[in-house]
Image 1 (cartoon, protein in one colour):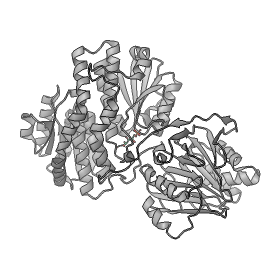
Image 2 (cartoon, rainbow, N blue to C red):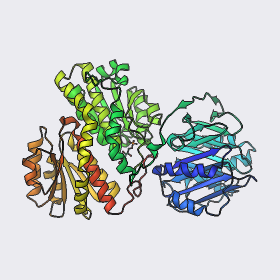
Image 3 (cartoon, rainbow, N blue to C red):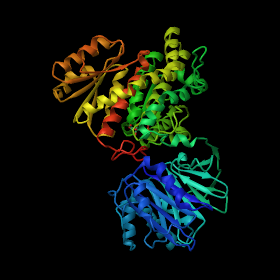
Image 4 (cartoon, helix red, strand yellow):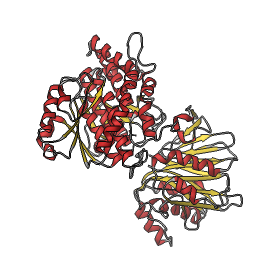
Length: 614
Ligand code: F6R
């Protein structure tokens, strides 16, 4: 939620800040702004409601000079999206400007105290309270900006990544982090600051991740320094990160989402590379090799995740229970963290997160670690907070996912979970050779299978035209494909704004079947597995109540297609990997319906890619 970017060096700051904001727009896009100190020391803040493009128009004719600046793209938490609530925020005297990602939970108490001291407020944000608190401390205590930030943050309860600049100071940005991502890119005589290293990857490969409770002093004339709030200097670890810029561009596709759907055959090559021996089918995950005893002796595995990652975890539950015979629970991280859950030292908690920054998942990780469990991460973003907070893990390696609707991360997560289940099952001796080989060979063939699945694109596009104006959708699946149904429904609702529900197919008759009439499209997943006959009967139940059936079936299917109104044919691979195959046409269906409705597919309303507030 919210993207922050900063620059100090010898170049013009503004173009760098705006480019960074465009790359960070996936994190929030209801308002945006920049603050820069120009050559005369003036501190200029420009901000407006809307997207970064709107900000660019707003900047026409303004004084954009300065080689130091900070910028922000917002996802509203306190205060509606409008010009006043947009960041950066000036302090009362307009001597300090601040950008903030996160939530100051005790802002009301701090604000009341500032009002008593004569402060007034232009916005309804918690962030403006913080900039005024910094100014108040700076003036009353006559201390440096760094000291004022440190003291102010000691009074703050909540999550933040902030950056602050000051009138008359061309050289220095003060930045700090608590539970919200922040990274400093180190160039030659210049520094870059961002919520996400990918937004500044074209300028440098050298990054320093700011940790919780740290304040960075980013001064163009000095080496980067990082302090605690108590002013203890911390050691700096520079990490290398290499990424190609083409991964951050649309590459000829109209939307990032479509590009990312089409990338899946390749992203799964990257996900599997080095982990499955193509000759022998043997699966090796370093996280399992290094922690063999923990996995072999685990009494229980608990997945914690949100949204799409939670759906992938439900598939992980099937895979691990089936292949490793370890009991598995799947928890919404947001519920888990507040439920006083029972966590034992012989539990393994697996945190699943594309961004690696989801606040609830991160909090669940911290809770599990405190309780003594071994915590494993399945993340995409290298160096992200969850990846760093876990004991070990496996990256999914699907490259930057920029479209807000998660697609390639879902298939990457399920792929890693399948490899994880095989690796653990092998160590425990709970999987027989034939099934192990069946799955590992199918994993190796996934890239070519997905190329094959994608041939259905034009057919799904046509189908989408028929259903663009439906008001509701139901998605049904069983077994491994019950979570696929949930995921299909989530994709549709988040980008088309059509109400959609996913259900385990047999559960329909316990209530939801009352919703079925001729206006209700029902996407029924009925690919071959041990639930196929049951799914066919569930389709019959819907059909006999007039529902419109869109059946996802095997190419060679004979039975279900006779009852379906429309058919989506997919190639068949081993049952536990079918969610990866089936999710592709469901992603395409949601995509084309949303495009037909004229929705902003990559930046749907009210959403943000990375949910760093709870
Ligand atoms: C849906 C979607 C969200 C995320 C959820 C968790 O398309 O993207 O539901 O899956 O916010 O995000 P991560 O995986 O980054 O923790």
